[in-house]
Image 1 (cartoon, one colour):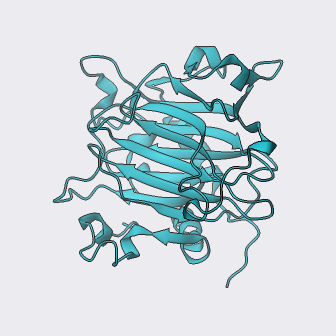
Image 2 (cartoon, rainbow, N blue to C red):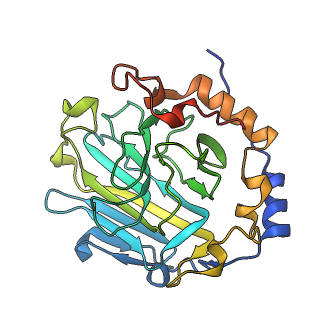
Image 3 (cartoon, rainbow, N blue to C red):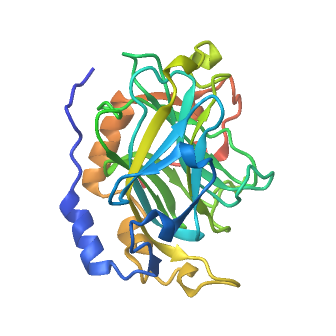
Length: 298
């Protein structure tokens, strides 16, 4: 198998896009937690650094913790740096995701990063998923090329009417294209909140539920910083920035597809890091979903 210490991504390309086309619709211009989020957990399960720039969510046997943006967005660039639970994290899921509802509603759209914990010495698995009108089943699983418990790494979503791209440290790991599917399975109609949470999922998260959470090692702590949104903030009844005016870099032609350097990194990820792809699971899907036939390279 090909070995590579860290995939290369053309940061200059993104910097130029941000500088030249960075006309913000409404973006998070403060890293203050109170300015951007509301939390949903006991005070004991949420802490901040002294300067307020880093946030710590903890899980114990009594409670997990989560937070949600105060604003909703439709299309844009959404990014956060996370450091995951170290040591024995079996059974624990740290989630960072976008969702149209403040609950697992039956008609929700959703874009997921889920980090599936493991026993000490075993690597984390990163699961991504896409929901449309309450239906998911679009899982992919990846290994990572670094230990996500040792330092902060950025996890980002680019969302426009042409594609959804999941990034890890600016490297595209998953591309979900809008090709006017006959099954209409592309979430592009509803604004979404951003969430993060840490919770117990030892009925499925690690080895299909065989490995249970060791509560003697609680509390389990994940940490967050550098929240960044450059997106279209929702305003009722309909914000002007949602229309495809291409006023924003994330809705211009260069963001409708991967750049050549991004394609190189994406190809490396596909060769080396993909553990599971629902589009290749013919036992689960004897007839593959329509979007599985669409090339992510176009």
